[in-house]
Length: 172
Image (cartoon, rainbow, N blue to C red; front, side, top):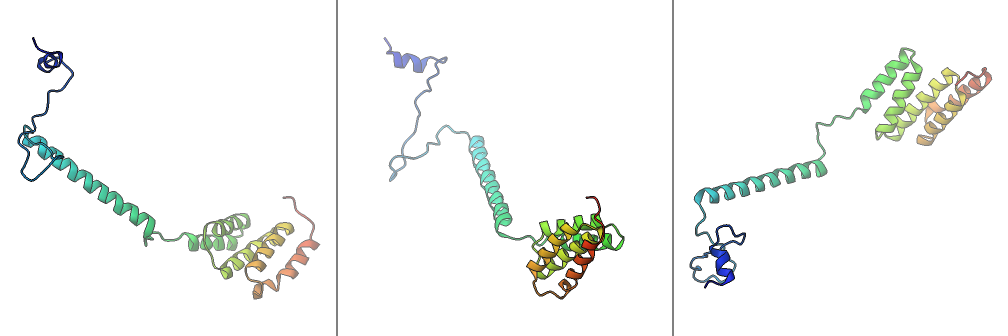
């Protein structure tokens, strides 16, 4: 009479897998070898191909990650000079609030040197003076002075502020 284990092995409906036929172990090798007896060539080719594709995908991913993290792309042209150009043209056309908005966007998004930051802040302050918003002008004159304390264009700022404060206030 077969034992319960033998019965399950012989039963085709059993969920238990049959024992692995490892075949003869290669000489000089002990333990841990992968049996290939009974594996179809198509399955071997598929597994090798899938392994190759996985390694290639990992290599591409690693290369893209390194490029993104460590290499500054030369394709990324900064938008800063264009923002200044737009703001200057808006100022020339008399669109002062829009010019102020673009100047501020430039200062918020760009790493500008102190000289440029001072000039842009001074331009914003001048536009606020022209709009009659003296309090805002004072703030931007202080920004300009903090960025470049001895700038020649700041000499006229005191005169502009006095003139602004002498005018009647406009609504905000």
